Length: 57
Image 1 (cartoon, rainbow, N blue to C red):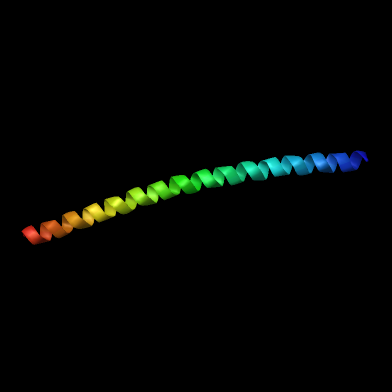
Image 2 (image 1 turned 45 degrees about the vertical axis):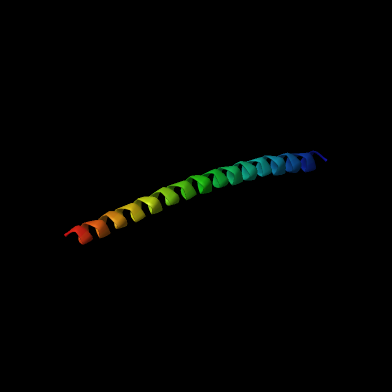
């Protein structure tokens, strides 16, 4: 009985850790998406500027 309780406690601790890591993963995915969007917008802006420079030259 005591061993079962120890294992249940350990399992609960591991589940909390897994839940915390999943939450952190979701936050990182949101941050990564924002970075990707900003980088993509910057790339498009730079591409447009380069095309404009070629047209002017």
